[in-house]
Length: 418
Ligand code: AMP
Ligand code: GLY
Image (cartoon, rainbow, N blue to C red; front, side):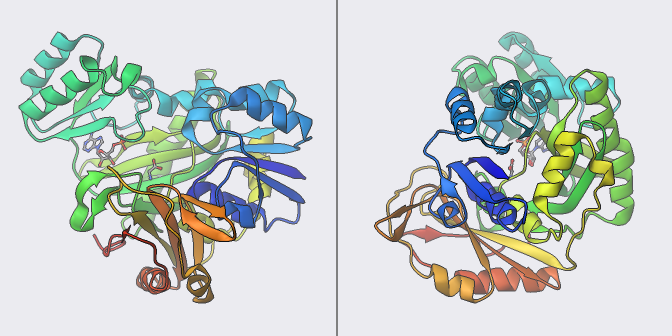
């Protein structure tokens, strides 16, 4: 099979790395890819959001299957466009990807189908939003409705902070049209766990649970990032909690989307908070998480191409998905200054030495130039290692990161520990 993966970060490197192991995949392409992906797939210089360009290339080059990984092409309807062109594609159509693209939509869906989540109200008018915040008091959470690169959420500890957030979103258009509608919701407390699940429109297969670390610095300090590291499985996600999540959240979500005429095929990302009243949904994403995918796919024992095909064909219930025993940890090596301001173009050394220690180094923001690998983004690498326990996986990831260096390299020293 000729397979194209759309995207170019650490998540897509992990997907390509796993697909390259499938005997079914004879030719693998990635658009736009990056310096590390180029080692396992042929990179095609098309932007992930270029829907028409991607479909045209996939058609002209006779792709048998396309996997769309990032949120924006999914929301733009890339899967719909590929299907219309007769090309099987993995990922939700735009009408199902909306569970990530509109928080107002996903909150309403949860309310209608009694799926546990934070109490909320949606606003399109600034004065009513401000009045609601004053009435509710703090802490309170303000969310821009649309996609905002993971930055459209403010957990406000004071009324003033919440008011400022709402003004920035609705008045100053900090996130453009994404903030014209805001969701204001109850602040929940409890540990956070992520569960990704394969879906075929009707059936669902949860992957191993995971946890990521969103803040830039140790001790969960500093600004929010795309994720500074992740591990799986989460010790907090006990079999009892898993059972409740499947019954109260996962299956009802898949059934709700089907009932609404928006069957979900692809990966649903369940961001969960384990509150004292039980597990609740913090957010849905319509895709694999980054960096959660890197440790999770490192633990997958089955052929990923088989699973992708079953999701598209609606036969996920017939696939036996196997996971390795033990745990995996991904440590992100970032450019100094990320997520605010950072430099690119610095040479990276020590990659081969790191892999010789048994880790897999997934590239997030790199480019290959004249035989050298250079930094080309905020998150640069995800050093991923497995172990028979979580502690061993964490230690192996840190040990394997030691030989790697580039100018102003920054990483957290407490991944898996807080
Ligand atoms: P999101 O982009 O929706 O995942 O939100 C980013 C982060 O904000 C989450 O990972 C939580 O830590 C926090 N958060 C979002 N919604 C709530 C809520 N209702 N209560 C408490 N924390 C929240
Ligand atoms: N790591 C968080 C996300 O992918 O949304």
